[in-house]
Length: 291
Ligand SMILES: Nc1ncnc2c1ncn2[C@@H]1O[C@H](COP(=O)(O)OP(=O)(O)OP(=O)(O)O)[C@@H](O)[C@H]1O
Image (cartoon, rainbow, N blue to C red; front, side, top):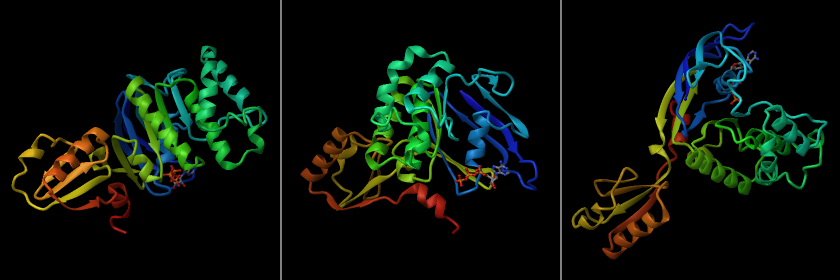
């Protein structure tokens, strides 16, 4: 588990704190979305967690160990913040070098599926020096993913991926979190992508943790029912993800296709559907409040 306690960061020469007294925890297998406007402090927080910056004050521990107290605490971290590849070395050699550096040569077999995931397999023998911005992003992403990390820190991982690449990445990250209990902190301005992935969010505003909320606020369908009587048939369908309030059924898009089919079959059989709406994107609301 990663724990951040009262972390503050003031860069030399600045008269303001880029982060001020931030506290948070990320548990095993949890995917946490980090959101906030430009300059809010997201990258600074991630860099402190990745040890590429030192905090002005506060403590960050991973499984109880102060990450800044000694080397090798982050060996099982996959980090995509700043470019970490060698521009003059082919992509495939970059990945081999990274695995060797971490003593993980036995994972060379991961290189092909990882490069296929980020759609760089065809370009594997080219040097990132001549790559487009998106290709450089995807090289950094491949390096973060290749060593089967226990903890992923990804700063804007969707930038540079096309829609199919984005969906493939979302699917694999979900799968890793479910099957291998990998923890993740992901920052992105692409709120729809985050909503497809995260269970919990932290919102940073001017260096401070302004809000934290869970994924219950992910997109949902609102089904307006013609009547609120004779709803015994749908009682068994209600859950944390399918909530009935008055005559509105709030159905989270997290539920399975079997559940969706069951709900619509039941509603249709009783001709209960008045109209359907998509609930406003909650993350967008957070961003735009007070604007
Ligand atoms: N090396 C640095 N030296 C001085 N100030 C810095 C440095 N890095 C970041 N800052 C300042 O700290 C604040 C937070 O920056 P940070 O990059 O963490 O924001 P961010 O939330 O990641 O923004 P964006 O969404 O634009 O990437 C900004 O005011 C920024 O100018």
